[in-house]
Length: 124
Image (cartoon, rainbow, N blue to C red; front, top):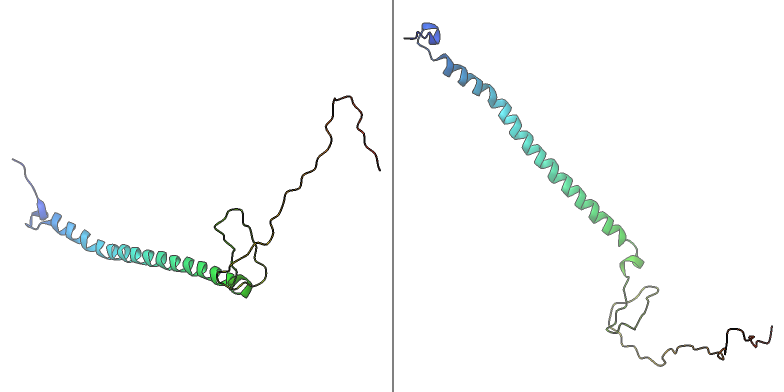
């Protein structure tokens, strides 16, 4: 048989008391850790808001002048049609009539009969 002197022979559960005291001591630490997690989440949310506001400021600055705000592009259903906008354009749909088409330039010369023939060139 073994002899046990738990509670210093007083009959008290000293192990249970010590465990209870240790858990009571951890309560403030647990609360602080929970509050830290909440503060960290708030800091992250504020950082995200700050980044979005910075992006909005950049976009608003790009629209600060009429030239940047009222810029338009030319589009066409034909790939061969190219255009550009200068100045301040007005939004809308426009009909364009083509009155002349560009033509290619071709330059010809007489053929050379052999590689040793002299080039018959005159002029300066």
